[in-house]
Amino acid sequence: MRCLPGLLSLIVSLPLQAVDLVVVEKALRTMTLYQDGREVKRFHIAMGDSPTGHKLQEGDQRTPQGRYILDYKKQDSAFYRSIHISYPNAADRLRAEALGVSPGGQIMIHGENPNSELSPEEQQAFNWTNGCIAVTNKEMDELWQLIRPGTPIEIWP
Image 1 (tube, rainbow, N blue to C red):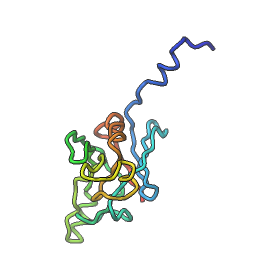
Image 2: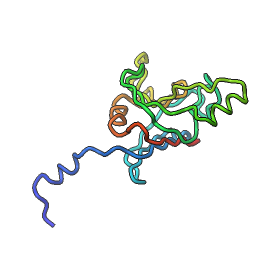
Image 3: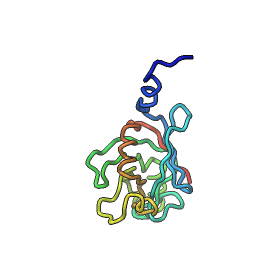
Image 4: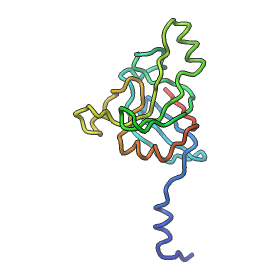
C-alpha cells in the first residue's frame, strides 16, 4: 500500500480525542487516561501527605478512593489549573456524619505549587498536596485538552 507524502505525519500529529475514563492507582502513584477501553496516556502523580486509605475527614491529607466524576474545570486555580473531583459523594457524607466529622471537599487534579522552590520534577517526587492529585503544569495542559466535565474517575488503593 502506498501512502501519500505527508499523510503519515498528518495522522501522527492529530490531537487525541477526549478520554472517557481516568484511573488513579494510589499505590503506584499513577493516573491513566482511557479511551474506548484502551490506555491513551499515563502520568506520575503526587497526592496528599498520607495517601494510604480512603479520605475520611477534612484535613486528613488523604486522597479519596472510589468512583467519582470530574465535574468542572477551574482555569484560575491557585495551583495553575484544576479539574474538580466530585468528592464527597453520598456515601462519603454518611460516613463522615457517622464519625461526627466534616468529609472535606475541593479535591482536585491540579498543577504545580507556585510557591515551591523545587523544580516540577522534584515536586512530583513527593506527596505534598492536602489530598488532591498533582501533576506538572505541562501535564495539566495535556489533561485540560483530554478531559471533559462529566468524565468518570476511579481512584484505587
